[in-house]
Image (cartoon, rainbow, N blue to C red):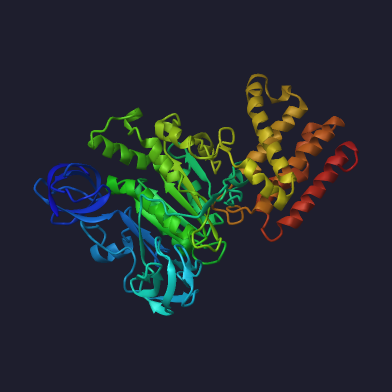
Length: 588
């Protein structure tokens, strides 16, 4: 049944005569068949957000409903691909339309002609249920795509094939308990605003290794956890998220460029295909999906892009993989919500944002987690959600930052002062936090011994003590404070410059393994402990700062990966000897 447009207000269109339509249905508008989604219904009148430019669309134009909600296509071909906010493949659209995307263009999200090599993992007569893995496809050299029984189907396999098939060809037939024959293809569809089901949810207990020392050691995030990266313009939000996408020890990365500047997304699109995956040696794009919905693209599609990305991530999570969703940024997404809310004439909340802003943010982040997948084989997967927040002027008291902080468990607060001082990652160690420290402590103790967390806590105490001492030093000068306090300032400087600061453009320092982080931090903490013992034995404080081992600790981050265990042990041994020689004491 077709309706007629009665009002057009930017991306919002009101149409009448849609009594058969439902909320969240996808509709097509006008002669160009523009894509839209029904936001609410009043009788037979529907308010529709349009995912394309609405210029030229006017009252009287026809609206037809597809009868299905906004959904994504799931199957082989997702990886190493670039989509827009509603999962249209940008490479295929470029082939059709060139540099400028035409309105109303319709391209399948997954290639319908490419054949995939399907290998069954179940036999005829096997009992299957929703989520059971029935076969595999080597989608890329980095990820084995697992074909699962779609949700709502269970029964006995009556036929299963092997060989090369397109995503639309039948690969398996299942007889359900009520006697129906269900054909299964590699292609599935799932509504983006509905979370995919799972068997059980667990408390996250394994850290996600990002290779960034300030994150992994000071403010770690668990696999299946949630994190926010707030910061003002120019503080390095995008750089932090790029580093997480490149180096995180996860199987699949979904990067959502949601409303950020086009040149930032261009950097991602140009850089990622050339990056080598440290885990496999293959190009990083082999385990990455990019969703590009920049600030110059339709505002309504920006709102949908977050859900598109996390639904694709849930699909790979259900295969038993560790997946990370990186959204850059949720502030732009919230601005899209605010614009649509204003056009719907809803009652505004704080700063004009809709009153349901916090609940929408919670709906996004609560889809993260560490879960037991459907299928009955006990496999586990995780989905980690990391969102950037871009508060105007860096003021985190604004609604998006505050609502996000109430939901997420890790807060990496970026500081423009650190960024301008060329300290990257510019995460401020005084106002950042991680609520996963207690649940992750058993993992750290098991893999690196209790010393790791003890050293981490000592380093945080030293950094906090430095902040308090800085006020005194400004008043009386550094020479007027005690040797112990001067040592605190020196050790804090070592922690900041030699440990927390990393160079993303230096091959040795752009990624740091947990073992290397533990050994680097141990060197600094041992230096602090031995110097304090030497001060008690009347050693000269300036002489302690000038020992050759102090310089070597500063250069420890540049030691090649192959030789760092040996070299760090040598530095610690030299430090022992040099400090002992200053006061004639025994080795500590």
